[in-house]
Image (cartoon, rainbow, N blue to C red; front, side):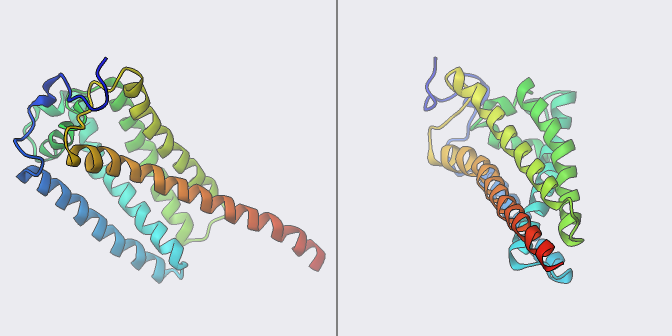
Length: 220
C-alpha cells in the first residue's frame, strides 16, 4: 500500500515542473474571484432584506457554495459522464486537471467521486438556493434546510476521502505544499469547517427558540 505522502502511481504523475504553474495561478484566481463576487452578493442581499450581520456572512457562503457546485462541479459531472476530465481539452477541464495533480481520481471518472458529485450538484445546490430564500424571507423551515445541507456536505467530504484513506491513499499527491495544504486540505476543509459552524448555529438557534416557548405560554 502507498502511504498518503507517496505521489500517485497513475497518470497524475503528469504534473507541472513546479507547484505554481500558470494553470494553478489561474485556478486560484478563479476561486478568489468567485469568492469575492459571492461575498458582495450575499452581503448585499442580506442588507436589502434586513438580515443580521451573521446571516449576511452565511448568505455569502451559500452563494459561493451554490456557485461552485453549479459552475465547477456541474461541468465536472458532465465531463465524467461523457468521457473523463483527462480526455477533455475544455477550459473547465484544465482547472480540474490542475486539481487532478493532487487527487488523480478526478481525472479518470472515479465512480465514487462522480456519484457523490452528482448528488452534490443536484441536491446540495438546490438546498443552498432554498436556504438562501428561507433566510431572506425568514421562513420557519430555515434551520431544517440548513441542518440537512450541512449534513450532506459533511457526508460528501467523508465519503470522498475515507475510501481512499482505507486503501492507503494511492491517488493522493502530497509531494508539495500546494497540492497538500491548498488543494487537498484547504479546499476540502472549507466544506467541513463551515458546515460544522452552521450546524452549531442551528443548534444554538433551535435551543433559544425552545427556551422561549415556555416563556410565551407564561405571558399568555
